Every structure is written in C-alpha cells, then in structure tokens.
Amino acid sequence: MIGEVLTENLPFLLEGYRNTLYLVAVAFGGSLVLGTFVAVLRIAPVPMLPRLARVEVEVFRNTPLLLQMSFAYLGLGSLGIRLRPFTAAAIVLTLYTGAYVTETVRSGIASIGPRQIEAARSIGMTFPKTMRLVVLPQALRTVIPPLGNLMIAMVKNSAIAASIAFPELLYQTQILDSRTFATFEVYNGAIFAFLTITLPLSFAVSRLEKKLRIAR
Amino acid sequence: MSSGSALVELSKVNKSFGRLHVLKDVDLSVGMGEVVVVLGPSGSGKSTLLRCVNGLEPVDSGEVHFDGKDVSRAGRSIHKLRSEIGMVFQQFDLFPHLSVINNVMLGPVEVKRVPKAEARNMAEQLLEKVGIPEKADSYPAELSGGQQQRVAIARGLAMNPKLMMFDEPTSALDPEMIKEVLDVMLDLAKEGMTMIVVTHEMGFARHAAKRVVFMDEGRVVEEAAPEAFFSTPKQDRTKAFLSKILGH
Image (cartoon, rainbow over all chains, first blue to last red; front, side, top):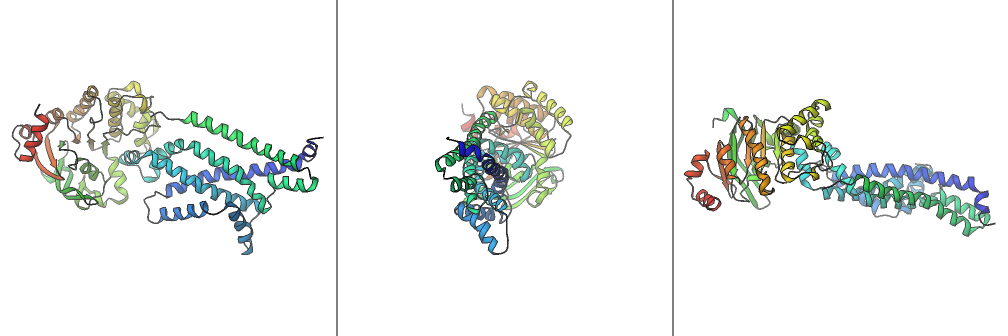
C-alpha cells in the first residue's frame, strides 16, 4: 500500500523532523540577532570594527555552505575541537545565514537615510540608542520580505547538515531509503515535511509585513 | 556682545567638505536669551554653521563653545551637550514609526531618564503649546507639514534646551502653513528662548530677531539689529541680496 513505509517508520521520520525544527529554530533566532548586530557594527563609529565585520560577512557569504559544515565538523575535529553534529550545524547555519541577514539589514539601514540618524543624535542619543530606538525599528520593517526569503532559504539549507550526519529530516530519509528502497515514497514524504515548515513561514512573513507597515 | 554672557561662541571657525570651503573664519556670538536670524543665499554655509554648533559636523579649525564648553573637545559628553540644544530641521524629520506623543517623549525618557508618566505629562503640555494636543496619538504621516514641524519644535523643547536652532523651518511648507509655525517660534522668542534661526522669512527676522547675521560664501558679511540691517545695510553684497528678496 502506498504510504505504508511512511506510516510504519513515522517515529523515525518524526525524529528527523524534530531535529530539523531544532536546528532551524536556533539558526532563525541566531542569524537574525547576529546578522543585525553585525550590520550595526558595519557602520559603528569605532575604528576597525566595520572592517572586521565586513571580513566576517564576506568569508561566510562567499564560501559554500557544504564546505563550511565539513570544516566545522571534520576540519576543526581534526584539530581536536570536536563539535557534535548539531552544534557544528547550528553554528555554521547561523553564521552563514547571518552574513546574508547583515547585508539585508544594512540595505534597510541605508534606506532610512542619514537625516533620521541626525535627528536622533540632535536630541542627544548615543549611537547604540540611535540604532535601537530609531534606525532599526524602521530598517527591519522595510526588509521583512527579503529577511523572510532568507529564513525560507535557511530552512532549506538546513538539509546540508545531513552531510555531517546530523539526523535531520533529509538524513533520516536517506537512511530509510537505503533500508526500504521505497525511494519515491520516502523522498515524497520529505518534500511534504519541508513544505509544512516553509509554507507557513512564508505566509507568516507576508502577514507580518502587512501588520508592521508604517505610513510615510 | 560681551563674551562673558555668551551661550554660543564661535571663533575663527573653518569647515570644508573636500575642496569646498563652506565656513571661512566665522565668528559668531549668541547671548543668553538672544534671537539671532541668519540670512544668506543657499550654499552660503548657514546650515553648516548650525551643525557645527551642536557638533553634528566637526570643525576643521577654530573653536565652538556652547555654554562654556568646547564642542570639538566634548568627547562623550557631546551627547549631553546636544541634549541641551533643540534642533528643528527643514524636512521635520520626525520618527515615522512613533506616534506624535512618543516622538516628543523619546528624548526625555531615553536620554534624560525622565519617568514615563512625567514625560507624557510634559509632552502633552508641549503639544498644547504648539497648538495640536488632539494629534498626540496620530502618526507623523497623518499630519500636515505645518503640524509635523510644530511637533518637531515640541520634540526639541521637550529636552528643556538652553538653545533652539532652526534650519529653514518653513522652507518645505505650503504657504498657508508657514504662519502657524512662525507663530510658535515668535511665542518662543517672546518667552526669552535663545534661538538661532536660519530662514528666508524676512517678516520673522524683522519682528523676532535681536540681531540679523548675513552670510555669503562661507563668511559672515554683516551683522546688525534688524532695523539697521534692513534699512541701512553697509555691505554691497548685503544690499544686492536684500534688493533681490525685498524688491517686489
């Protein structure tokens, strides 16, 4: 019967689904916070910080995610820094996605323009306060759609953690395929499972965009 | 002007943007309670002058003192210093994501750590003063230009500043809204607020200014009391400027 393999191995697949959700949840929060923070560092009036932040972004944005995962798990492992697959995957996915978040938030900050920053400075606000209270609340709103795209891409990218044997959804699917040879069925199930994460996410993003729109 | 009582004191201030020499050896002194109107053609350095007073632009040479403190050597106390100077911009530059009342309260609450209830109280009084108490919960985009500019004035006043600076506050307004903003400014002047006003409103200069400063090409060309300035300008450049703007 079609679907039998899936129903019989449901706990096994659900474990993968749960692990994907854990990984995605950590990278979601982590990359947004880290990426926004680094975006602010990129324009901070402090010597060297903007340059360091730029280097960080360019390294993570311009190398393959698959390679970064292998580096964090196998490369660092060979030096004796042994991370668990989950830890390695979460750190790498956060940094990789965070680099894109940085660039996106930076474009949002640029769209706010220098006059808002000057208005805030004129009432005596420090740089961190200007960012937190005036610039970011506006900048983040304007980049909700592209940030949503990044988060959806991040969910899909989480499957690369299968390459370092983190038992997430794709990894479990591959194992199940090799055990049962119900190839079409199991991969179909995996696609459906990913859609249950990405489609609601995309829906939530457009809802949020409408809710937070500011009139100008 | 005796320098002892001066709230703002600029001496030999120079400022360039790349090759453009915007301020050339500018001296200016503004006493406590004085209203100084700065006139001049666009590009004469009027806005830059204001921005040097609160340190938004660092000067290249010369000194800027506010309330006895050296603005260019203020370091981290520049924030405190700026909080004592209200600034009103040509384009209003309210914070669009905050309601009117929150625009006015933001500085007191976040910079001066005034308790929220107290800050709200004061903000309501200030909105009353600028004539739009009913707009407290509106957002800037829902207001006319004149109303936005009055909120911007209230935002500046909320910090209880020692000095208010206005950078062409009516230049972006429809003609019929100019008066409502100038009226608020006139009231402030009458109350004894120290003000530096960059404007093209000659009526305001005549009625509110204690002194008119005329700038051209980065220099202070002439300064005088308004009656003398408008009736018997001394410099040819001033005469040429006045004949163009008052000629019809």
